[in-house]
Image 1 (spheres, helix red, strand yellow):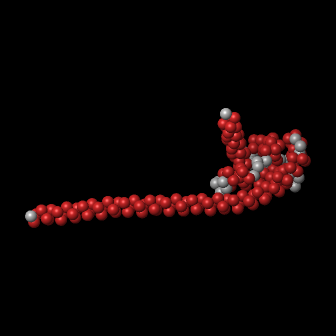
Image 2 (tube, rainbow, N blue to C red):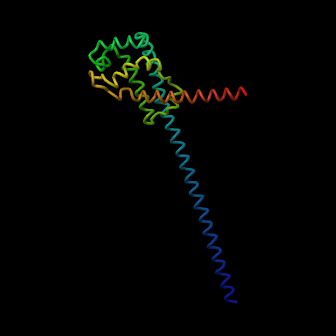
Image 3 (cartoon, rainbow, N blue to C red):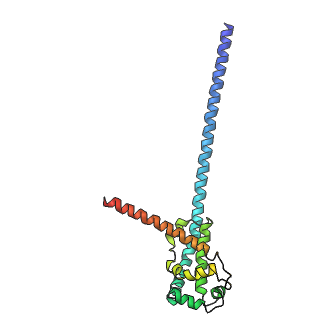
Length: 198
């Protein structure tokens, strides 16, 4: 009998130990899940704070963009064609001298503005969706300056044969993002129209 009661005691201890072990596993899993939950919550808060910070920066760019768009309109009125722009630029010994001149202050400031926005997007400091939905890309300005950009990038920045291949490369990156998003938006609109028509 003594052995039987001793066996029961050991059996009870084993069961208690097993229950405690199971309980500690459950508690461990619960603590881990709580830790993961807290980490996700902190990440969400950090993302929200980052977006709010981006929004503040973007608001500054939107205000500045209003001024820049007026400059771009004036620039496009002054140089109505690519040919007129090319003639005005070729009065200078290099595109760099033209770019740095008072005559082409608008060209320089417009390019600089969009290069800044593009750089912030490219480096992830500003969310592209925010930029895309609040700042229109200056397509007319981009088209009007196509020959100028090509010449600077391929043959004449600071003199013939002295190119600047990365000239406005960030702005070009931004243009590509806009084009890709526009294509997605168009496909989405067409799909919704097709679905509504059926």
